[in-house]
Length: 267
Image (tube, rainbow, N blue to C red):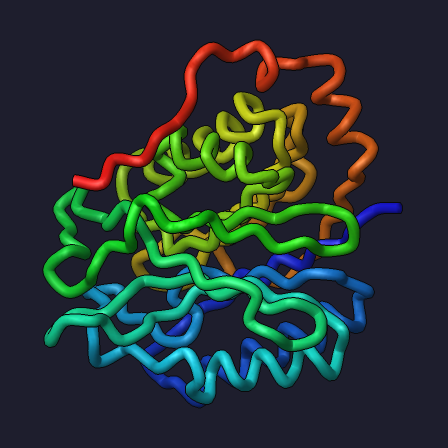
């Protein structure tokens, strides 16, 4: 039996109410398409391409996540969505991804470990990094285990390997991947590389719109791209076959053959 994943490539603004409406509409579309899981991009609750900070944050029990929980429960649809939570320190927020199960319960919250201090941008000016030693967020959906990272994390293969060690079979990467020279090429190449080296499927969901590349893609555990979108907002579905993933790992036992473990750095 395959698991149907809906990729919600949304264009997100600073209008919180509009963002919630379009996320709920995407959930309705995903449910009508028979999806088991909807993945929304990084910062799907509120986004400004000039920078996201405390003014864009909303509590975990606020309207956005609450609305997605209610919709998930009503539709029997699991949801993974990027958002921004208030930080522990004044003047800071947290880039987070929330996993909601098909009963509408929050199954896990991932707080972004690798802040985007690169290519002329500095997330750490406004955001707090999540703890590297925090337990990975892994959501079981219809017989597959979906493990969560976000955006810039895709450039760090050791995080993906840690998620696989925690039982992840599919790496889920909500992103607002910044546009720029070669950035779309990096996004695609890294998603495929993470799939091949971990013999894991990858669901990489990018934001559409100003300052970001879109170009969401779903990659099989063998590195074959199953679904690839353009730059415009779009919702599309891909079916993941747990049996095919097992077969790839049987033919290519690189996870079993490796000689190094991943240990988080705490400083």
